[in-house]
Length: 451
Image (cartoon, rainbow, N blue to C red; front, side, top):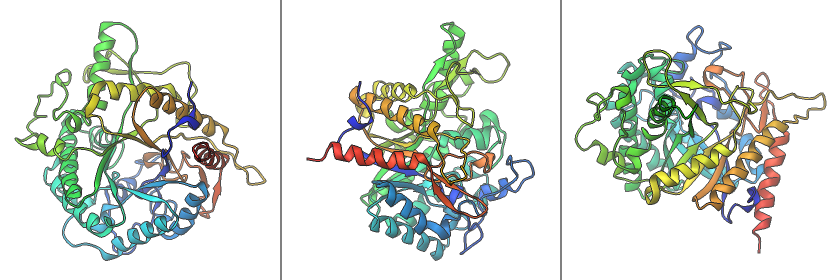
């Protein structure tokens, strides 16, 4: 059975973050408000009532964070660019100070020997665009392509590969269907135009990036879907959920068509959102890599209430993270094998762009943070990844979530995912035991392949 040290030579090691979760400085240097600034200010929207106004203060402390990355020996750093820092209203005038920040960040990473891997959109839509209906408005896709051109023209000479969108499924469902994330709209199936317009935005931006000779990726949140039983109703429900969660945002990119959503009563044109030529735009540029964000499998049963054609059942008999998510490392191998089988030669090389867990970390009196549960989680998932590679799946890299404890969206600061502990009162950074473990793993992997 292969283990994590058996991953191939040249395999890339990294960490991931997102702008709103770490940057802070939300009202500095010309940045405009985002949907998360507005949503987090609503009473009751975030569990601890706090916002990302300061977060990890990465905007001011990025040199310290780059030093932490250098200490890990990373190949790459995946971060996101805050659209409202570049275009405060999501269109028109460009904010020079915003571009200058990412100039400094990219240059600092390169000086540290770390390849930047930016994500253009990680959920922080400029509020002015949301005021015009956000991702329900087709025009937002065209504004996104203009924004992509601005950023690529500034940074593309130093940044070879780009991720367009992060987890468009989660943003659509949590932000537009259920309303538990920004922008907080609870539209249920009427949120589906937000799916198509995000994918259209990807296609338009991908063409912009390709014109500049840059590589294009997307980061999708994917999950192995397991039926709660062999019962026909449970199996049909699982197929419906798989189409919504996994295929809705992957089939158009790789197969040029939407999956069958008839179980939801949704026509092929997603209620009129899909226009002639749209699917060609979405699939046309192709992908140089598929980013896969994996946290856990999903167990699905037949619905017990009217509405959606599925119900969620608990994954039983496994450990859980501090967030309550089931820990199932072999689910990553299952997912990767499913992708390879489903898409065949259409599947581009894969990078795991997020994988990690929340742990109730304890800071000991001597300052040590022995997060063995996180080490076990990462080790198990990397062994599962190595097994998938041994089975023939082309996986090129692994970016754990996350470098730092950060602002965990509607959970506020209550969930800690970082290799580095952050005291949000003082902003002091303290590497955890998992930081040392990851550093040693990277060192050992390289030594294994040294001539």
